[in-house]
Amino acid sequence: MEWSDGMFGIHGLSHGDVVPTFELFMAHKHPLDREPVRALWVNLLDGGGQGALLHRVIDVRGRERRVFSAVQAAAEPSGQVEYVHGFMVDVTQSLRIESQHAASDAIEGVYGHKALIEQAKGIVMALRSVSAPAAFQVLSTRSQHANVKLHIVAEELVNAAANGKAQEVLAGY
Image (cartoon, rainbow, N blue to C red; front, side):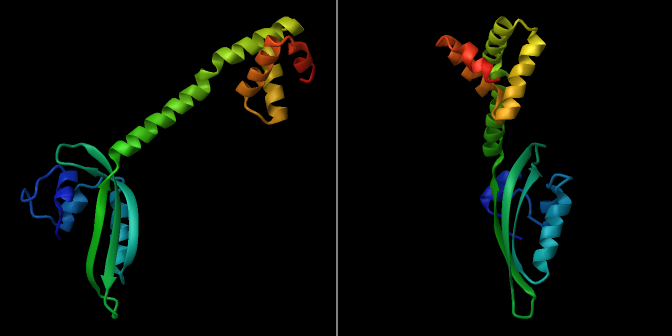
């Protein structure tokens, strides 16, 4: 087995630190990813083919890295695998950034429109003389019946109120 400098780096090693072996390769897999990685190799060594997998590597310092591996096993006409080659890309930082964006979007979705929804609730409470929970129910029901997000319903009502047309819009609820 031969490793590139990049492969050594992903494992927290430098070229020449160790002799790369399949056992070493597997020992650095996250325990929950060892079976899928092993299954991919077993499949490829049984007649060749291609495969790819997103999995985790634990480097020599104990840091977890998310990696994408693509592997090709070239087989002779007899089906005997002649060689296997592939590459591994560390996608840890890319996935971390993507996760942070997704979390920010989720938080924005939950809390970002809260002030707008509260303002719309206040308008409903004032115009219909109802409690806060009842006002929220009015907005929620409109959201469900119109099949639009709650903050869109709230924005529509707040904009209508700014133009003196809240009563008309609310009449449609």
